[in-house]
Image (cartoon, rainbow, N blue to C red):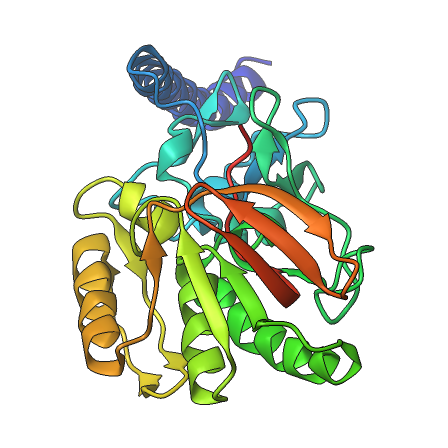
Length: 297
């Protein structure tokens, strides 16, 4: 009997020690994550800039796979375990990779754009990015593509679909009015210029859109992209500052025209075909409207 008890003690004790260390480590990590989340929220950093995870606590089993899968996690913590549940602890650090959703084995993560405060702005689109309003196309950030490389690719493809749609649109002073000069809108503008369209691009803030608002030194791109006119661009661990500097250089070299600090105020179908778009600076009559970034007020 004593022998059996000794055997249990020999095997159980190490297991108990390992379990105790594991629990203690988890509690310490949970405490750190809670402190980081509290610090971010007290600073007002509560609104994700783009596509981000919505975690269902009822489905989350606290495995931490989503945390490990996030490419931003090493340099800019985004997700963390608090009381054995995954939470978005630094919302503004999320740039919409979506790797967390793919990695989650319990289907506890949904990718959304917008919040309860801002509203959910992802519209329903056709496969060619056209909305239920003929001649209005949406891609990039507003379409829910937070990852910059994906947004650029969307801008490229959306513009090609728009070119096809122009065959069915009556004549208007503008072929297309492009709203937004973020990753998708900037790419669409270059594509419109490359295809010699009569276009106009308006941006209510600065070149780069949401990227411009990211924290300093934030890693924003880690993969190559293809830009109209420019061709293949090989980025490796590009920060916000380097990417914006590159875009500014492209803007100067290509002479792509962007009207800054111009906000869309009203969109109305025109009796002559297409749309009349009133902005804070002018009134435009365009055959097609491409919306790549638009803040709701």
